Image (tube, rainbow, N blue to C red; front, side):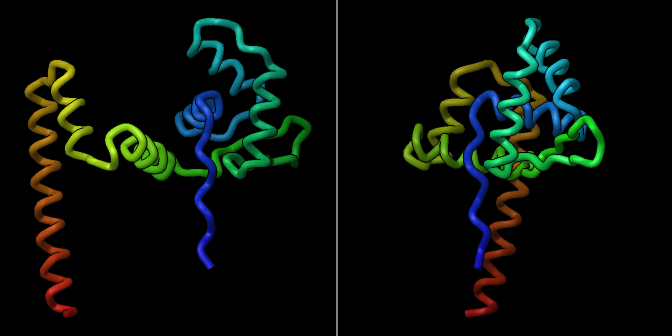
Length: 141
């Protein structure tokens, strides 16, 4: 029986996850301080606490109750969350077409030579991976 993927985090939940991914396990106070610095505006402590509690219920974070101050840690991996959000975005916005996404991204802003070189390397790696998996499929046929 496969485990269901975690729910899509809200924007506020995603902000908290970014803090936890970047800084590791943290108390609500530490999370709140990071959010206030990031937004350059005071974030309400009780708001941060409530969001953390909701995230716990959704399975997005885990909480260590051993000490007086509860410590929260991300229960979802950054890469998996990014993949989930990107898949939903590409499906909803571009009809599932990665080509349309890439064309829009590259066509709407200036791309540096370094970024283009990285994209070329990525495309080469994907081609190699696809040709390897195709030959593996042929071997199993």
